[in-house]
Image (cartoon, rainbow, N blue to C red):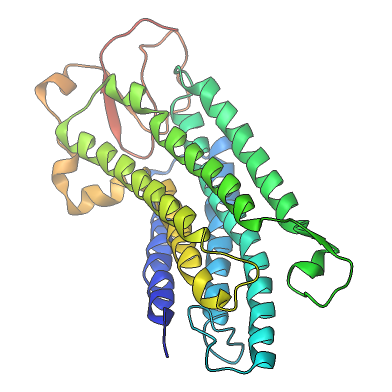
Length: 327
């Protein structure tokens, strides 16, 4: 019986290459635009951009290992045909896989959020959202630390989480509530991060092609939020005493994997307009209003308060703004 095995494969094979391609194109854009890399930009690309992709790949590989091959732990498959000894083995392996995957999930999602926030911090450094952006960076970092701590100490001693033969262990009484509380928190942060720049974007006077690019960026972020909601719903199927844990965990891990790679993709999308412009020349077209206003090339970090208020950006993505009073 294949069960949800095809879903596991699809959740890994489709989004993982797409996210990896977006990351590669992001680095390509850096070379195309010959931009200097600032401190925060270096963090977003070298530390967060690349490292969270590595963690996301590890998360995907973990799912494949747990569903097929010599180390088959039956992810997405039912255990009905097996005897009690085999069922106990697969349940123990499932709990171990779940415990390890929690680290990969928390760090890949958390670092993807930080990559997007680092992008905001650079592009909107002189705008009203700079302080909320810093607050969200701190909140995301604290969420990652808290989730890591609680994941590590689900049980004391730690191995008792997956090895139920350990005597006198102390464990969380309701792991489902742990998943719900931490997942809902990070889902709310997704919506806040998505909403942060909307006010500033609405104040921009953009050519049609650039509006499409901005809409695409926000649309990709909303897909992350949708995947997060499905992941939360499916995570509530988890029950520590279930005899079908590999099957019941599968959809939660599938949506978690999709969410991880969508987050990686969304964190790269805003930088890819120079690539898109090669294939869709209309994205570089302006209008009469835009050409009558001062423009700035994304990535210009030399803006000062005395200059007309403009929003810097990435590569050759230009945004025109109506004159505004300084903050």
